[in-house]
Image (cartoon, rainbow, N blue to C red; front, side):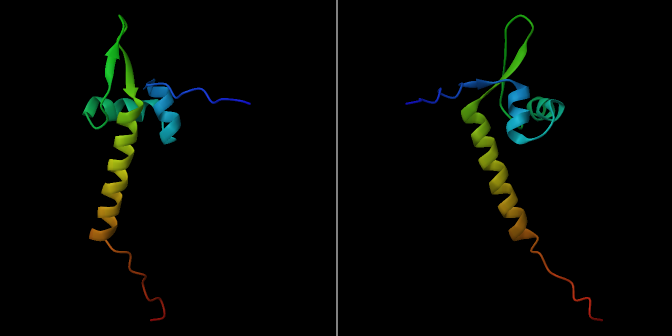
Length: 81
């Protein structure tokens, strides 16, 4: 019987980029703008994002997307003119 390893509490920016299917540079920009909470660790100041904060960010983005859809309903154009 195989047991799955627990998810790490903290992720690198590269890990976050993989989860979000985007670039590390984009994730860095999210962190620097304060959109995605992160901490700097170690002497080289490497960024880490807590897994729970990433999940909260994703939920927030879903919420904003839902609101966008409500505010901007899709209307098909009638091309039979």
